[in-house]
Image: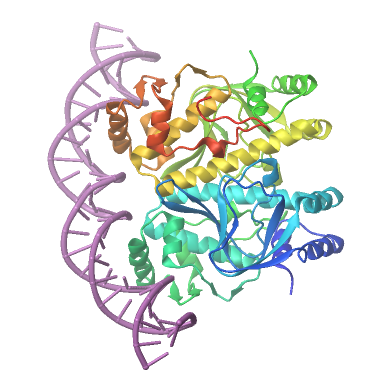
Length: 246
Length: 246
DNA sequence: CTGCCGGGCTAACCTATGTGATTCCGCGCG
DNA sequence: CGCGCGGAATCACATAGGTTAGCCCGGCAG
């Protein structure tokens, strides 16, 4: 059973077995366990280490002064919360857990050392940063143009495809620990409307959502409803060509 | 009169005069002139060069299959349209001009050479990539949480502060070549509502917008109306501390 | 066992924003 | 010199989505 981080980076590049060993070692450093709803980093911090999610879900978020809150992105196992932020000096947002989470906290120095010695890894880390930026762009489109149903459907497609990329789906099902309030904060909708819209998606047989488990009976159908095009996830290792259903 | 690119990077780091000379040379390569409403790069392209905006405005945008369009970000003079995209293999969005534009088209190889020889420049380029990502996050918040008035006010604050950073403001005024349709595509609002909201901003004396010129009589007031906090632009060269009004 | 709390669900009502259509103005082009 | 067009401005009307409030259920803490 391979580490989510490794599975993820291998969607992009081939890693040597030495590279993989280095990443495995790295993942065992500074392991910490966090409860749900804890902050990993706060706006204004000047982090000196990088947090790699080993298990559980977290998110970036930002509060407006009057309390409104937006979830800016999700971190799933294999994601790095703050890859390369040390180039900037201050966090402009916070990162918090959504479920209990285990992370590896890797000192800045250690990362720089690894990146210096393993160009393939260094490049892969930049790739992950750029893919995150691409995801952020797609969220801009999602919030700006899609209506509630498309928006939620799109988010579910994205999460499902990303989870599949790190081996966390089973057939057409995956875990869905997000509460409706979480979905609301991520989509810019009210909780009430998220609920309404989920009913609609259920009624249309596009999703089965019970407890913390999501099943997507027909991914293509959901993608169509969402106007979801997976190209922005850049899961196209050279030569290879895959669509979201591969 | 210094190049916008250099002014911009110097908000972040000190460049040696050699660094600056290299950037100046670079800016003279492959200069091209484009009309308004031309595409610089299209979704699906695999660009082998980097486009630096010397003058004029451009934007990233994305179309949904049914024609809806979202502007994802703006490029002002000194911005690089597609810094580091060669790490990804395909453009997941297009870049088009909003006004007549002049760009320097710099071959990938050349950039890599320069970055290899001038670590300061290399770092500054990554800084610009990360700041763009931070801007994208703030847009997520903007679209997800702010109402129409805050949203437009926020965008105007951002554009003004960014223009000021490259010396393109005069007192409290700057150029504003965006049409209301452009503002609508960027904010996810309808043209009609953009118009209504601009009236509101005018009535509140927060902006003076005539033709292609924007004046912000009281930037602090506009920032307050927008819940605008400039920290996400990361204009904080070490030691220095400035607020948006400096 | 009971009481509380987080999370899901629903209903009635309200409003910010979208739609579609029309007018007006200025400017470049034939 | 008149026509056509992009862009701004309005108006009347429609609706997606927000708000407030309340209920129900299940788990766990005391």
